[in-house]
Image 1 (spheres, protein in one colour):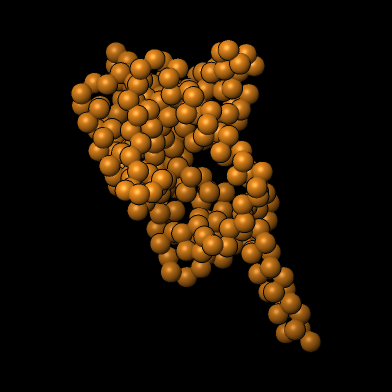
Image 2 (image 1 turned 135 degrees about the vertical axis):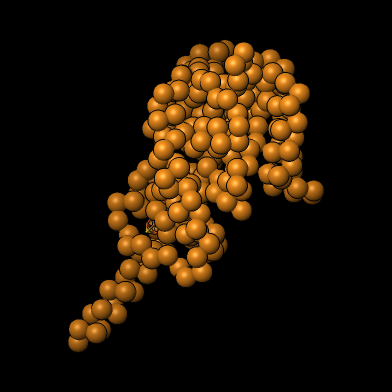
Length: 230
Ligand code: SF4
């Protein structure tokens, strides 16, 4: 498998984080409040699917699980693109095994606009970067991407979905994605553990779930250094 949007962003925060995700995921410690926020975001996204009326949803699970079957989802999406479905939710794309799904893909006269739903009152730069990755995969997959929106959570609960147009900012990330995606993909497959010294990247933009592991490695290394100095 190549990289997902999440893989790419985690690898850009820290190469070791991506490597650990692939080789030692059992070391992750996800704080309960983060897990709760992720779950709440999923519920808001599910509600937003109908914001443009009738839609087709592409989610397909592997039999007997709640694990998305990415290949089948991409095949189903391709069928709906070919048949001209106007609104496609969880539209999935595979490009050289790199994968992304967009929350809502909406047909226009010239191509497709896409909408990413975020359970947040404002647009953060990390959202724009996510959309930049999605734009890269969709464009490379042959989709003519028009406008790109982040759907924020508005104040009025009767009209909670507020789209914000981020097209130029998201499309500006195309070259950035292209210049890192292939190298990160090679790196994640390396057998030897990728070593990165802990630093500011352990907390920015997100607190790393391997914090305890890496910092205990660091303490051990320092202890060994002191032993050698004796
Ligand atoms: S704790 Fe820091 S060094 Fe370790 S994987 Fe996370 S970001 Fe990288």
